[in-house]
Image (tube, rainbow, N blue to C red):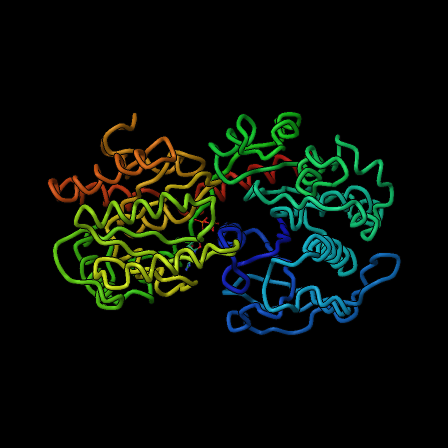
Length: 490
Ligand code: ADP
């Protein structure tokens, strides 16, 4: 099959979060199964060109119709760790992708509406005719709309779209004027609640809603989250629309890139290990302690790695930190936030704990340190308020680090409680709590610390059971192929 991914991120060239890992990892899995995959991305000025091999111009003068005129684009091609990637660079005063960072601008909806249009224009003009186009999140949700309403008549009539929603909290709610710029001229028609009219702000359009209505199949990133977004407020206003289109909606768990995340060969960690030699993990713990100036000693190391975002249960992360310190454990946090004030709060906390040699807060993005933490920590906390899939808990398990998570979204699909799961003992792999409150964190974390302290043999077995799970792209890759097969014959 010939598949084109259109996305705003792809690891590691342009990565903000899990979306980037999915685009790269799924593409690699599909290629390893013999399918042809190409990825279309914006050419950000801040993207990591050092991860692109053989970058060259692939299409010189791509004129993309826009707002009554047209914007000239250059399309670049390069290999990103083997993946075939095209990068669209618009030449206009707005400098859509030359702003030093990926997101966070008042005209983000315009920027990505333009990118969606440009990507389709590129497929059309360069005679690319994939069987399936796979789009991701609100940034590219306009692709199926434009494909059906405009490009089908121009020569892209056979293409089918699978749209994946990674995060319902960001839907691309914006003014209808954006549609006119893309060539969708009937505001009453497109702005109708049955199409793209936002359910909350009746004057706005909702790009994600457009993706749901127009795509041939819609997925989100875990089966439990697919249930949550239809039946609870986690659908952020889209529950009704998802219910309407339930026959073409489902959840597929994200996979983990098992080459990038592999303690046996990971170049970021000093001591390699696998499930048979999990004891070697301890050598990484020592290095981690030295690097972060934590004191040595027989006490468990609890970690948090991830964005510092309200979604992640910030007050509960903080609570887990104090719980760990109060129970003779150590705590390491690596994260950074983009919401106002959050980094500052964690800087204050860092200063407050400055002299404490049992904890370290690293506020920023640091891939290298992240690998070392996964390898060196014994426990990883994830008290998320919502978590569509979550990769962090799967990475932790891959590195023999036991996850302590809230039972929500993809965490519920991947972590099975040591004491209470209905799975056989041999399939359990972590600790889970229900309610996003202090009592929840306390109960799960104290059970985890208790097992580490009182039953080291059983704790080790739990860690090994986590390592034994296959959370690679193997299964999800097959699920996506099933979806592609299903829609290409529709
Ligand atoms: P989300 O997509 O909500 O950010 P995921 O758990 O799906 O959360 O993916 C997070 C990914 O980003 C993981 O690969 C994690 O290691 C990485 N990550 C997040 N924050 C940081 C950070 N501050 N430094 C290094 N890696 C990070």
